[in-house]
Image 1 (cartoon, chains in turn green, yellow):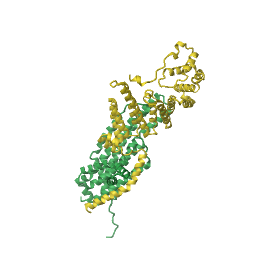
Image 2: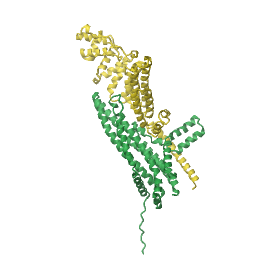
Image 3: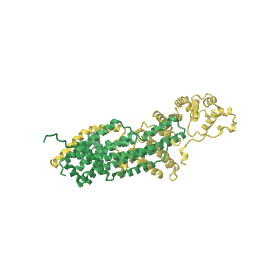
Image 4: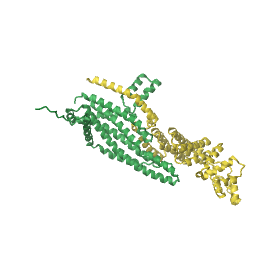
Length: 309
Length: 325
């Protein structure tokens, strides 16, 4: 028997394994009918159109409040839904895989544990991404339609009041700036980044957690505490000048070092109020989110690497 | 690896990575705060004012969402005419969303206009008490708007709203120094024009209308009136009247009739404009030369002395004491 070049056995790359696992996780989560919440979101978006308050000024005030309502309510609902979905979905994944024995099947094959974890995390992030994209579409559609209606009303009122054409054009520009714009997409991206960090943290917790409930509760706690991280750091830095006790200072410093800073991703409020954000700022946010996701995923892998399953 | 060692390594890694990111994070926070994308965290005032749930939502980066719900609540207070609650609610709202012009303007409008009107007509309190409440409501509305401007100095609309409030003859009696208030209104309109308001020509004229009422600033007002008059699009009745009275004030010996004809074009137009000014001067505009001009126009138009408008009484100016009798 002549020696022939052995047929190379199919060896999936890390990336392809992760993609397969992530698609599986995504399908698994979709089957749990998570997308039903979109109906609730649609009701929120439509509802936000009906809260027009009394106007007290000229054409420039007409509908301005409604446009802000649509943005504020939609982005608020997006953030809440996305955080809940990411935490609950991540917390469910590992215990569910153990329960239906998928985990054993996967790990019995030459699948590195890091691939398994990253694949699962990517599945959750894909779910969040798709959810946010659909919600974003709904928000943009509602906002676009309403902006057109508001501009029509404003123009009618301005013409009635004898405004010159240039003033009407200027008003239209300002209203358009309050409507659909790229700033809004930056806000949605900021929500996604925050949620991605949260999912990575939840994944780390779930690797040593004993129950889904524990993972969910601890993750939500970290999420809320993370919004105080900036306070703790301020306390530490100002405490030096204010003469606060050394123990309190170190406690605050430790807190700022251990807990991620979720305040960083709270640019949504500023963006709803039409504050500009630069591409560089968005880039920094992305970098910071990647840093956190990488750190917590590696920690999850390290904890999970020699865990008995 | 034992569990204890694992935990220690985990904590050390978190500490090390935390230390690595801290400086960069702080720079980012400062940059975002400077760009107006987020606020300083220590808003104990607003945290104290809102309930626990709202506080948690606001903390989660959804301050504007809480603000919109509080705005709905404030509308309920407005309908119930619960002015103290309404004021408190707007204080919280602007703490949560300080860059939203609408909240500053609406809060100020509720206080200076709605609450003030309520106290003007309310009958359950003694007059002196109502007057004090009326005055303080207007002053609170003004202060609120001024704080809004402090937070958003480049917002033309807030400046214009302050101008509208301070030039309002129904609000002016509440101000301690009438001239200072009118001067502030003049400056506010000028600033709104500089910042690119929608109707710069109107606000330029409104700026003049305020300056013309400030005692001791007549020459400055005349200069502004002349400048605006050069553009025919500014030829509105009030501007022409003010140009007339300010020109007469600058040179009281001149022929009032000739001046009126020069500014208004013909005797009929001049008479109508001057008569309207004579009858309706509740806003406290200067009246220099109006009587002389009317006398000359009546002569030119052949109006008999018995029908002279000068025989009619001038409308009394606004006096808050009359409102609270």
